[in-house]
Image (cartoon, rainbow, N blue to C red; front, side):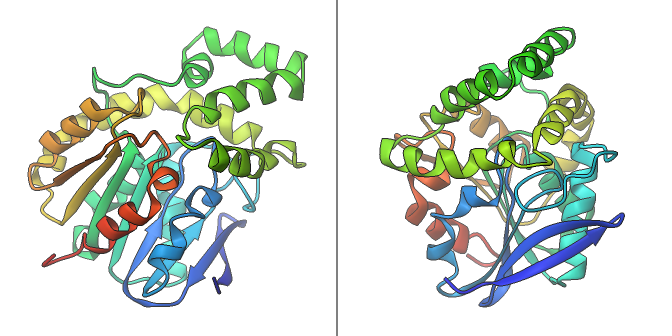
Length: 286
């Protein structure tokens, strides 16, 4: 589909974005880690037939710059999202968060409720929940002390060990083997680039537990949020699972909950047409 390449500048660093022209309100698709905006490649064609859509790579990922001195944290990702919205510029937005983009998307929504036409949560997280089960690779690189050993081993053996771990872990996020085999190499390319996405991966893992604990203090703000919210989870995801979806539904009392049977962590890859339909009906008055 036709899109316009955009560059957004934050702290002198370039964020790469794509804009698909269409009707407002604009749908902004956010990616988690260790992913990039290609995670939405199967979803975009169903949205951009009629709607304005923006995808972008957070700093450190995909085609965005990978600065050597930048702190890769959820708080800085909120700043990156704000820069995209302000510089493109976008008015009211439907924010679609997946995986680690839950904290920046929800943070921005809580801070700018009047500009949120809709908030959509796809197999994501925000605050500490007993139902959360981190993927094995994320546990290795986010747990204090353990992550020091994991990073040492991954550097000692170079790309071989990290690639095998990535192929095994991220490969489990897809339901369909053909889709997995097509997109795994595309998503992994950023780790073989120079500079690579490794610093962003390690930084966001190190920030993960602190982010979960800090965002747990904002649950009252979540309960008071009154903009349209749609929770769309693949119910076969063993990590950000159906219990996490139901917990989100409790924290956002006015939300709608949709569990897609058989879809896994990459719900937008497994069921793009269904997810697109639910996203496009997630605005006011729908």
